[in-house]
Image (tube, rainbow, N blue to C red; front, side, top):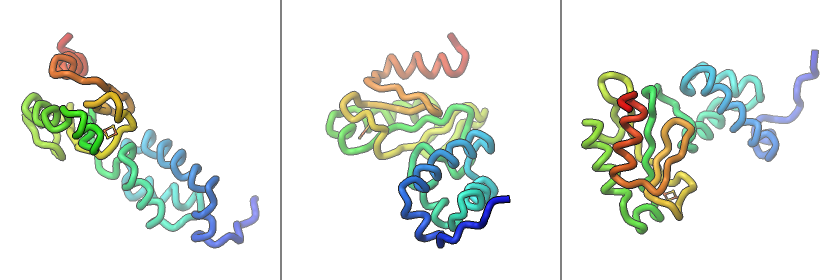
Length: 156
Ligand code: FES
């Protein structure tokens, strides 16, 4: 049995290695639970001996993590400043909303798609960009979006 850590949680959280472990642990927990619910956050906090509030804060900061259930294909469209300036982000969001018949923040009734706007997908030079689950799609056009949605829906 290992010795309990004598490092207070606040000190441990300032440790860069510990912070890196939080991200990895959250990613694994999300894979296991489907999203980062209260139990998943609590398990990560417990295993890393960190306050739940700090683990939740990290989980809710990164767009890669979901604290609420998502649909089978969770589409995140970037509306960050680079994408807005390069053009296309706002129009692409409207196009996706029309194609899916939902607004950003909603899910289709069949549970296939959910749509969310986020601030940056680290693809600033190749906007507009979306992430579907863990996959990035950039340099989008309306035609590419049509093909992507058809592919995800199994229509092609
Ligand atoms: S601002 Fe859109 S990818 Fe960075």
